[in-house]
Amino acid sequence: MRGPYRAIWRGSTTSNRGSNLLAANTAAKLSPEASRGPMLWCMSVGGLRIAKWVWVVGLGLGATPAFGQAAAPGTPPAAYPPPAAYPPPEASRPSAPAAEKSDRPEFSVRLDPFNWVINGRLGLELEVEALDFMTVEAVPQFVTTEAPPAFNFQGQPDILFQKSNGWGPLAGSSIGAGFWLDGKPFKGSVLRLYLTNYSIKYLTRDKQGEIDSVVHTERRLMGFLGSHRRFGAFTIAGGIGLGVELNKERRCFANASVASVTTDCPSSDQLIALDRNAANSKPEPLNGQFDPAYIDIRFSLGFVF
Image (tube, rainbow, N blue to C red; front, side, top):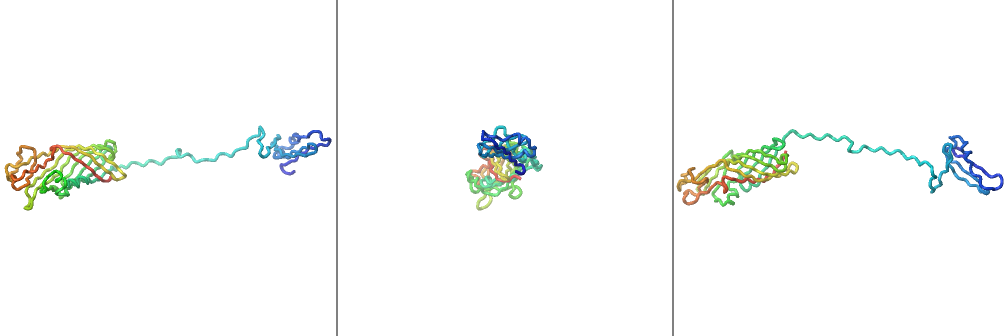
């Protein structure tokens, strides 16, 4: 046979006594190059020729297993291909540098629709970040309704009205600071301390015209506990405050005439006449029910930039 295949044959020239096996020495005498690869192993048993392929490696002789048979003991396993190269894990890859925090302080603009509808006063809440845990707030207030629903809720007469005593509808502003308990402005709980300065003109009038008028500046020192929620740039805020009136003024009438106004009053009330003859109708107090203590309630909507 040609190539790496070689036929090794040994027959019986005498009687059929036993079996003449393949001489391993014959394969061993072959050169290393020629002894590599499959060879045909032949023998004669009782005149019957039996052929079988053998695998000779180097100078040794070993039989290859037939199809479906287990490999002979000592046969070296077939070599496996080298493992494929995998990309490095995500954790080992260099991460992108974190975005730097902007040096520009955050600020918020909010409106208080609650007081706008009930009290006829629109508060524009302007607040800016001063420190990581503190903000500064100013709330200009605009008088938009002369006869708000709150006057009727308090049982005051329909002839009582309010106006701004400032620039147009602007009655004044408050100024204060907010301390954020969660350490992040415009998010979570906040403790505020602020001073209001709103100049309001109260007046009564009938079909004939104005009856009486009082100008009062609400100068109150307030403590406030609030909470803020953020949804992206949108924010919802609310809370309740308790304060004291610093500008305590008295006003009453010495006799039945509206013109007999005096500040020498037996009580701390600030009164406004409801009739041109004060004797015909009891004057209305402008002080709150719990004067000099006052409650401030806010519910505001706005944005954070």
